Amino acid sequence: MASAATHRRLATETWESLFRTQVTIMRQLSQEPAFKKVGAGEYDILYTLTRCPSGWLRLNEFNDKVLISQPSISRMVERMEKRGLIQRRTADGDRRGVLIGLTEAGAALQKEVGREHVKHVAELLGAGLDEDEMHTLLALTTKLRTAVTGK
Image (cartoon, rainbow, N blue to C red; front, side, top):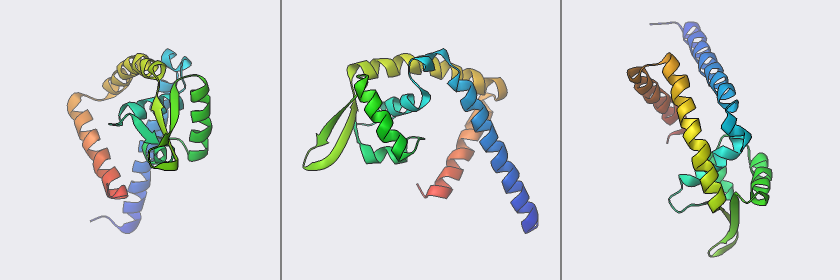
């Protein structure tokens, strides 16, 4: 059994490796030609909306679903709405609630960028991992996220 200090060191090294790998991959993905049409953060919002069963999401619910902070989300939503990619509406029965949904142009752009993005993700991960290793990594990251969030 490892000492507490050894365990902490291993945990720190593991975290550093996980974090640095994620940053490296994100930097590679952000260089995709498709992200010249829409930024990675904007794509994250478009993609998140495609995964909502109703097609709509409350503005304050984006915090749990996307990788950017709330102040950035509000400004980004405003810019995306001006570009015609997303639309707002008042929530039924709650005049203070604002719902965000895709426009046809936003849905089309998400599909276009998404096709290229998925290919690039597969290339990057496939360069270092075989399918069994991807399954293992998926299981491990899901297990860790569940342990940390309780979800």
